[in-house]
Image 1 (spheres, rainbow, N blue to C red):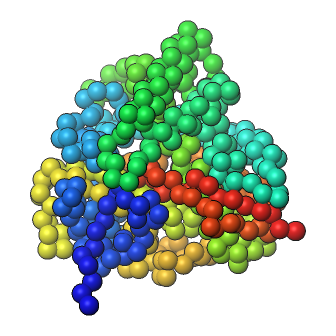
Image 2: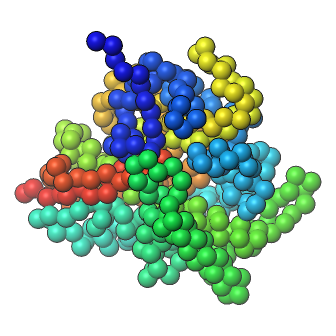
Image 3: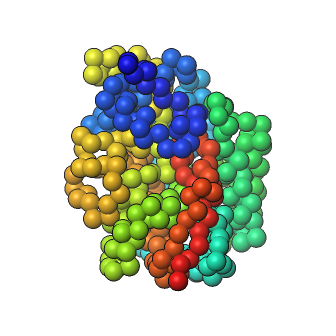
Length: 403
């Protein structure tokens, strides 16, 4: 019997559920995949995705990083200074400024605060039954990033709900919906108001640092960021900072329940935790893909991707590529990480700005979870996935601690 043609739809239940079998078929049968329904191309092999992430001259971010934006053909970098919508040289200058704010020392200085946020929520969990996502992995990461930004504590969870609404997609929904659009507007206006308050009353937070920072232009001159630029960056950072760790640690609870031998390894040797975080990022990265616009015809695997096409760079597929990794569908915290580049936090100029913070948060969260639940079980039948643009993870993971 002839197998049906492989179909990848990033707005389908298949994607929301983790499209790893679809990715495998794409790598084997259509390494340059074309979606007739949505008119985009997709790359899934590690040998293609990793170089594409670095080749900004061919695969541009200036038209947005989601399908609807790229398909419109209108450059987004002409408006607010959003770093994810930039190519060099503009990106280089903005990234240089942001790197001054996100220094290794600045991240390590947050360790005590991160630990306090993790302990705050883990102390509230009922060992007899709790939702690992709703009660733990969702509320603490947003408090970490909003505390760094300077958002009042009592407004942090509202930010999380705006982020979730903005990313939510129903099956078949390509464009952001009315509720999501309103959430994005409310989120942006909220940050804009905070920036304006910081201009009047500076504090020791990221808003104030960005207000005071100088952005170097190509001509060597200096300029200050506008309020809208800072608010846009805060929206981006708040979203990425909250969603990445929420999904990563939520995935950890689920995946380790499926692989209890790996959880025992962590119990026996806590020094393996950083390696476990890297394997989680490889095995099921929270952010599965980025969309680029190719700036010239690309000839690959006997297929031509025409100039101006939206191209999905699916890091989540590349991280499961058997051409790059040994037994890639096996979750193994002792994996040889030198085999290939882990694309779980991006690669190239747009690699995750807050990667060090995400790793710090996840490491601390796993430490505390190992203390709280040396043995546990998950009610897999009641687990529920999120339905989000480019994000894969869990909305509900019911847990019971075993004695």
